Image (tube, rainbow, N blue to C red; front, side, top):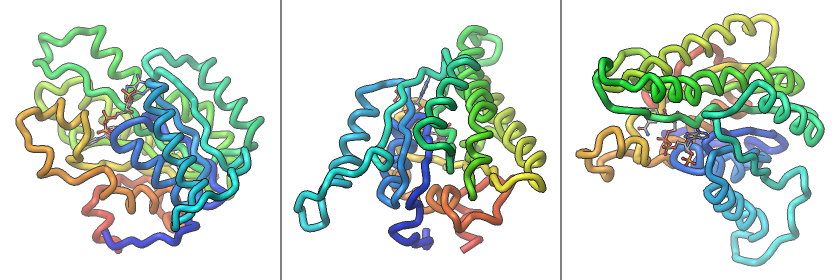
Amino acid sequence: MDYVPPKNLLAGRIILITGAGDGIGRAAALSCARYGATVILSGRTTEKLESVYDEIYHAMTTSDDGLSRPAPSSTMSPTIVPMDLARITQADAQQLARSIDSQYGRLDGLLHNAALLGERLPFEHTSIERWQEVMQVNLHAPLLLSHALLPLLECSDDGRLLFTSAGVGSKPRAYLGAYSVSKYALEGLAKLIADELEKTSKVRVNLINPGSTRTSMRATAFPAEDPQTLKTPEALMPLYLYLLGPDSRQEHGRTFTEDTFRRLL
Ligand code: NAP
């Protein structure tokens, strides 16, 4: 991708990323921090979030020639928010909003990235409990977080609400029932919010469909595939930076893939 963002693209922005401990979310957290954002790292596995935190902190305190730099201020350091989206309630989401409000007073970006693949079974053999868990993590959790955090995004001069879809969010794939349906519904939710905010808000709402990417989710979904044939999460970062930064101010209510992004450049 030919988009070359300036080093300070996200300077001063506060960005919350769900599923920041692994895969695409991890790459997005590291990238956003590298381009100047203060990142709020949310995820299910605290050790993974700590490892992302350490990597960001090390980069912030080490200059390009390997010398140490002063520790960043507390408002620039990343924050870790362990959160199991399978269990999140409206009260948890509101509590998170209160703590971001008291620490920063606003939110400039919310990247809904975490998701669960769920079972790969024919619909008639699907466990209803597992189906509901996928809907909870992939749809209801982003709904609760968007609902609670939208007022803080409205406090930003240039807020971004970014959802993560998939190819199966517009064309269902057999044996990926709950995952497909959750992404369909998520596209609907994102486009509904975009429609409502179009003329009344500065918050820009879009979706990313990352396409086939070398992560553990992809390996679980397609175990016979050679991961080396897939792009890495890092290769997608220009698109994520574009949609989370000021250059995408005119984008709203759209689903972006690598292809749509390439055509835009
Ligand atoms: P991944 O490597 O499996 O990472 C998923 C992340 O979501 C992990 O950090 C995981 O946390 C987190 N997560 C899962 N369940 C959670 C829960 N209950 N509470 C909180 N966090 C939870 O997947 P990925 O491939 O990077 O996927 C990222 C996004 O891209 C997803 O929305 C996915 O649907 C979408 N996508 C991916 C592809 C692809 O080919 N990879 C294609 C299209 C769309 P833990 O690490 O702690 O488990």
